[in-house]
Amino acid sequence: MAGRRAISGEARAVVTGAGSGIGRAFAEEVHRRGGGVVCADIDLDAAEETSVTIRAQGGRAHAARCDVSVLEDVEALGKAAEAFFGAEPSLVVNNAGVGGGGTLIEDISMEDWRWIVGVNFWGVVHGCRVFAPRLRRAGAGGIVNVSSAASFGAAPRMGAYNATKAAVLSLSETLHAEMSGSGVHVAVLCPTFVRTDIIRTSRIAESLRRRAQELMDRKGTDPADVARKTLDALDRNHLHVLPQADARFSWRLKRLAPGLFTRGMGRAARAMSAELGEG
Image (cartoon, rainbow, N blue to C red; front, side):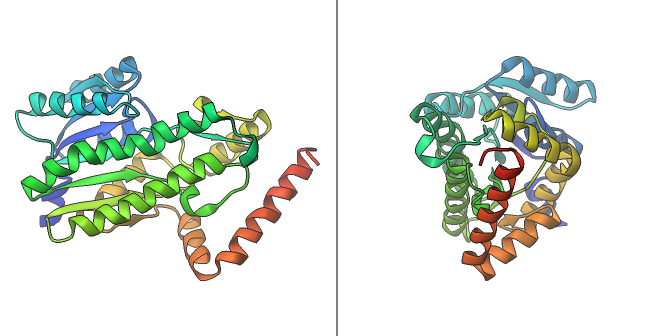
């Protein structure tokens, strides 16, 4: 497929949050497709683990520390990637994210709001601000923004997380429109449960953490499968990537009957609260 070679095949990729989970899976999938990758993460040791794994397989990879909530860090990442590749990156995966939940909107601390918005939303804004102009000038390449089914799912007690992921969805749709005709493809990934470390590192109520981990263990998708499907969709210039059946079902139901959908989410949340003895 011509599009596949142009976008995900033999790419010069930058992946944020590449130290684990979906980010590591994207980095490894880029390598499998013949590309090189700059593995960025706030945890440099984790980024280096991913990079070492790829290099051990004969691939080309470089580790970089980056706090995506800080614009200057992302600007430095752009310069580091250009130096590593000897050319501008051709693929950017804005994946770095954090989780939070278990608290009503009015009870979420302002510290948690700033933390979640800083990484999940501003991190993607910074990635698009730094790399989109470079890709536009090149007239080719791709951007993947990692959102979540939470962007449209409206699950109670997930207000801050939901809001940031909804913002990423809207931002990606806008960028897709702005890049139309430029040769640059844009995709936004909206998965449900994927087997990653996000629950372990989330700021989340312990009762919800246990339930979320149970669901993750039972229903979580292999991140390698998610990365593969997403890059395939990017090659075809598909904007919305919903890699699991439950994500696609929820997406269609929300669009068909949004009021019914959100009321159903409320009933499900009340049932869970009763089960957990929260009243």
